[in-house]
Length: 330
Image 1: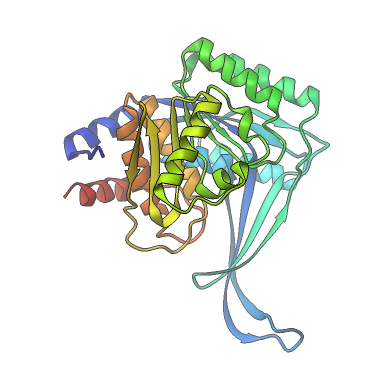
Image 2: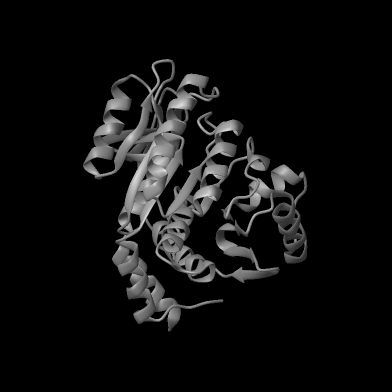
């Protein structure tokens, strides 16, 4: 598998500063409640969390955008928020991150998606989701597509971030991919199960192992079974590059008629939240900067090793990414 020396890494990072990446998908607000556990409740066998603080971050497709921005690229974000306080909070975070958010549409009929995580020390205790999962209304879908088409001329890569929350409808997916093909813009997909087979013709398709097993209806016990399943997915979707993430087992890249097994670079694992977001963001930003798929996958593997060492879904730190790549190249 490709390894990057310091000179090539510096060149890719430099070129990322000139890239412009569009992210389209399910926008979320990540809310964190931080505390400590000192006793068990007398009311029920559950921990009592002593509150130490609260914070909010960009989540879902917005976390993918945060990763793209952390890599130095310009971000154009497309999605939907509700007409509520959480939607305003999400817009404030986008503005503070300097994202182009003209393509973020307010839909009064929907709630802004909020994931609330309760964390004691470094232990993730519980997550509470407030979400809208209905498919977008036709008028909102059309408005989103108009914004996307208007911006596509200045875009170097597109990411479709699907959490099965209704923003990426089959019709919208098809029109975006067709528009990207016509504009010769690579499109990467981080899918979920509902629309898995709707992404025909994508440039990069990045499911995780569990998602592949789910849509195929079988457990993949060996590398041979994984290779057979990956070939089936790649052929059926007519995608150029398939990257299956496998958690602690690393990744499998299907490209050019071959399968490349990539071992994880992780030295410690605190929290896998957002690791998939980081992988697709890194791959597509690297491609937008002129990297080939093997360089991009190598960078993504190193980036995943960085973020899973942190608590919560956080964007990759560029200096830590450089350090991780340097260690891997030794």
